[in-house]
Length: 140
Image (cartoon, rainbow, N blue to C red; front, side, top):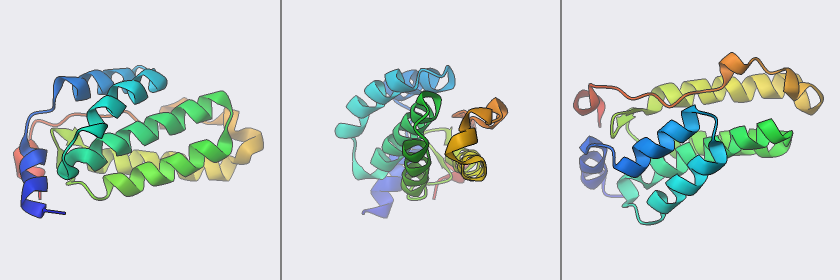
C-alpha cells in the first residue's frame, strides 16, 4: 500500500456517498448503509477502501445483531475493526479511532452475553460514526 497516497486520500473531504452512508448507519438503517457504501467501496483507491469497507462491515454486524445472528454479528465486528486499523485515526473527517473503540466494546459485551442473551445488549453500546473537524491534524 502506498502510504503517501493513503494519507492524501484521508485528508480529502468525505464524499457525498460516505456522508449518506454515515447518516444511514447512525439512523440504524444498516442494510441501506451497506448498499450505499458498497458502491463507494468498490471503486475506491486502496487508501480509503478499508475505511468504507470497515464501516460497511460494522453496519452489517449490527444488522446481524438486530436479526439475532450472533455469529455474524461478532465475526463482522471483528473483521470491520481489522479493516479500520489500516486507516488513520481520523480519515475523511471520520473518527476512526472512536469507531474502533466503540465497536470493540460492543463485540466484547456481545461475547460476554453470548447468543442466548444477545437481545439484552444495552443499546447505548451501539456505535455511531462520528465526524471530526480536525481531520488534517490526525492523519498519518
